[in-house]
Length: 63
Image (cartoon, rainbow, N blue to C red; front, side, top):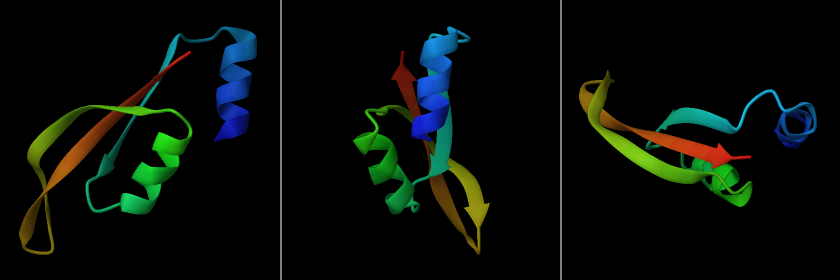
């Protein structure tokens, strides 16, 4: 992930990196926060997995 962010900054290919993950993927969410991504929104009950609705977390990093 650090390589991707560094490459994007050096090559000016984008001004922002966006991603989405399931709210239960707390390890990934903490990793993204450590890389300075911020939560930009939550899609409530966006996925139905194993018999229950789960939220999708949208995150972004401005370069």
